[in-house]
Structures are given as C-alpha cells and as structure tokens.
Image (cartoon, rainbow, N blue to C red; front, side):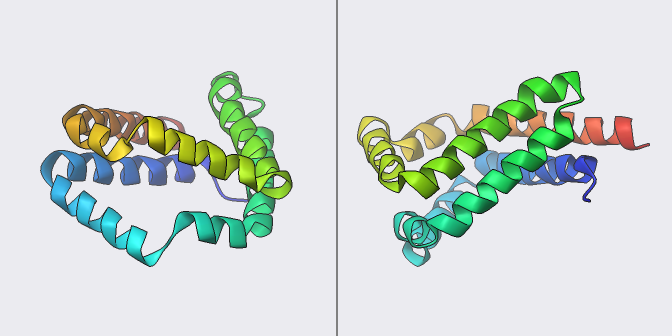
Length: 143
C-alpha cells in the first residue's frame, strides 16, 4: 500500500511547479495547454474509455474513503474528494452524456483560460502556499 504522506508530498511538489510556472512563465503554460489540446481531445478520450476510467475513479474513491476515514481532518477533506470521485465515476459509467453537457454549459458560461491568466499571480501564490502546507504536513508526520 502506498504511504498517503508520499502522495501528499508528490501533490505538493506538482502544485509548487504549476504555481511557479503560472507566476513566472505563463506563456509556457498556455503553450503546453494548446499542445495538449491538439494531441489529446478530452471528450473523445473520456467517452471512449469511460468504463475503465469510471471503475478507476470508483476504486480511487473507495481507497481515499478507507484511508482517511479515521482522521478527523481527512474526514472533511478527503472524504469530500472521495465522494466527488465516486459521483464522477458513476456518471462515467451510467450517464456520460451528463458530464459532456455540464462541460459544454460551463465552457459557454465561463472561460477558464482567461480567468487563470487574469488571476495567474494569485492562483500561483495559492498553489505555492498549498504546496508549502503539503510539504510541511509531510515533514511533520513523516519525520
């Protein structure tokens, strides 16, 4: 079984990298996003692989719920994430069109790229602070 603290550390490191890139190299983030969109269409890949992805999401949800159920802070944070993963996994298996409709409506209502670029400094700082908290948590509980 993977140590949950290693997962927290890895997420913290990834958050720090994205936070730094958002602040200091936003053009690189946009370029990577455009390249990824050209290479990998999310809607098609999601629908074509919806059953294995849905099963993986349900398994991840069960793992998170089992791992963090005994921790009071974990109950609030990670059980919420586990519930979200479970709902998303069930929608992938039972009603994938619901996810696509919600995504299309959200894209019409709110363009996230413009939001992230406009507020990239604050989002970057938030990611770096979240990263620092995760690394601190890892160091506190692992040492």
